[in-house]
Image (tube, rainbow, N blue to C red; front, top):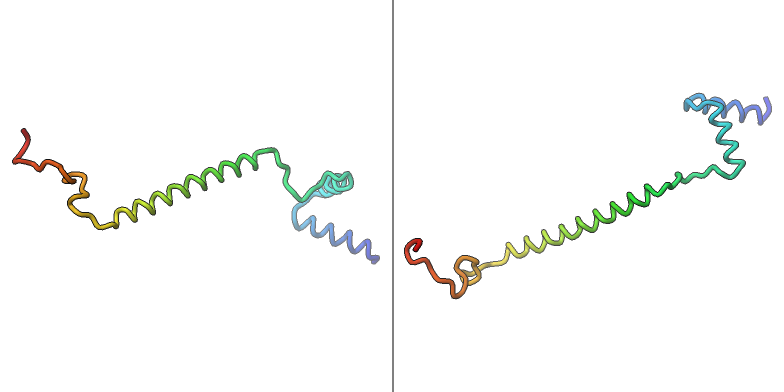
Length: 99
């Protein structure tokens, strides 16, 4: 058996094992010879749009994470009665109920 015959036989076995029809292989070969076969997927703009959407989401999540960190740090700070929203400085104290 010649080298070419062995290569063709091996290729046929691989195609058969992968479930690829010979016509599909021939179509790929034709596109390759024409320079139209690429290892990169066709970019129809959808991938660019998806990347932009994901970048926006990353930005939003980053801002939310930073805000959460700041809120947690603020909540951990010691408070005094003067810093309370309810009884802050100059706040009139309750005089025994609603008037």
